[in-house]
Length: 398
Image (tube, rainbow, N blue to C red; front, side, top):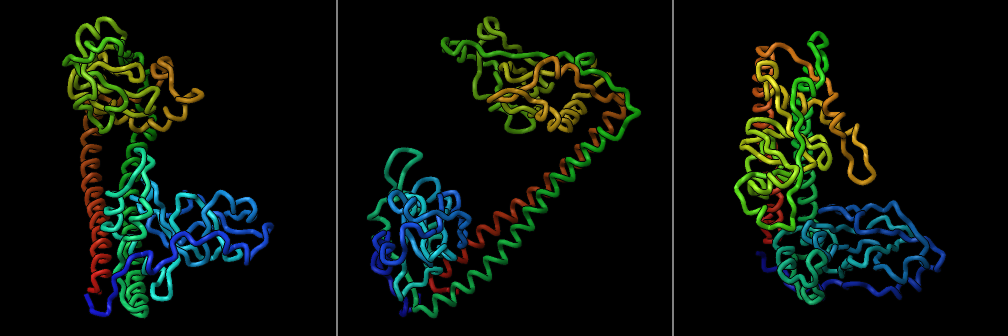
């Protein structure tokens, strides 16, 4: 690091939480000021959402005060860990108020606010703050003494501005590259879904039958939670929480034979599919093992595997998941009734054609997943690049 760089406590180069009495010398109580709730603070974004304005009299008592070019940092978990911060610019009448969970920093003449912003973007700074957090789980806060005593390395002001300019340009390019990768990832998923939906919606010559005519629709239930012995067995028992992937391989709970015998749950044979008809409405999964299910799931078992291919059935459910969701009813948790599931009409081409369709879809699905992995790795690499450049900047290596 260059010998011209200084190292000081934040409290030596910033006014932390400027006093509200400053406002009394600037505005009247009826004047408008910007208002910024916590949700309007972005993640690692300089610009703050300034859509709201309120009268000074409405906010001065209960909210945190800040002014033009002050740096705002969330001090409560998880907002602090996630990087909720920004620079107050373009404020109504130059004054703003916001969440009591903001820490406000006003830099002195030796420290550029944008340089301070990038300082707080560093993982290293936030990880140290996380270690020192105090309070109840879910509502921990960064302590005042950590903020005041946290040390910042900084060069002369003109060098700070040079570094900020480089970071702005590089981060803008990285953000654009990441946005393109995110769009490509989204396009991959949408193209596969469009192809899937097209197969099942544009084949009007296929015979259609009600699902209840060609499949057994099997309900489930929950063994009494009061009997802990019921949950000490080896039989897989699935809820929507276990529907994390296209296949249920394991379950959070395993039950006994007595639990099955003394409840309304049923065991669905492995290799079949289960669908969510209430919580998690629209989800569908294969079963890798014989698995009992709860009341929010239904097992769908073909009556004749020479008429319906299981993978074809799975793909068809995938294609109509939005339709099922839209049919859901209920005040708090939406669901569909057994009669609705049984009445769904499934297209049934010849079994040989079903297998060909499944083979093509599996091929496209594998290619889609391969591209998704590429784009996810690219986004991860771009995030790592940001972190690396930030560390270089604060070591004086840019």
